[in-house]
Length: 225
Image (cartoon, rainbow, N blue to C red; front, side):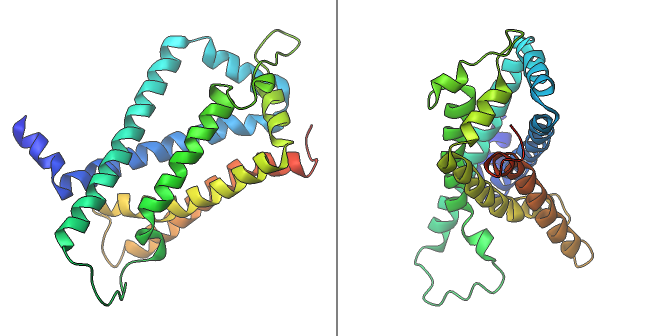
């Protein structure tokens, strides 16, 4: 047990934890996007899906607690690794060539903190109903929580809709390096795999960004509702 704790406290161990939790979060985003896209099928499809989730509170809360645990582990280990790297360097380099590092890799902590702020607002908006309680309290004709109406009314507010789009661009920027880094941690790191890993990471990041952004954009441009 002590050896395991020592390993996950080392820089290599933290990278492994960051990679595992990062990929789990990406899988959640894919599943979450599939559910969200039911918005385009209309109120009944989305509200039925939401009601089915809420109809199984044990599964829902287990998933929420598990997701929160994964998110916290990812965040705390990323910050700890950044501090370890900074401490190991000692004095900052006088000449920062950044020959191997990309802009996305150098700003992972900054974009990660922006994502954290976005997640906090997102939960306040759609999960806890703190920011727009009048939208959150809506019910459809069958007495179900009107998730469709909540999303529609929320994204009819321009600053909210465009704020979400901006946040998703930051998420995509973070993922474009994060997915690549996680896959390379698991061994996909040679001249044959690296170009494909980079392309796949950027493609998946953009796909998620476009998918999530399509909903507020569709509402803002009057394509739904």
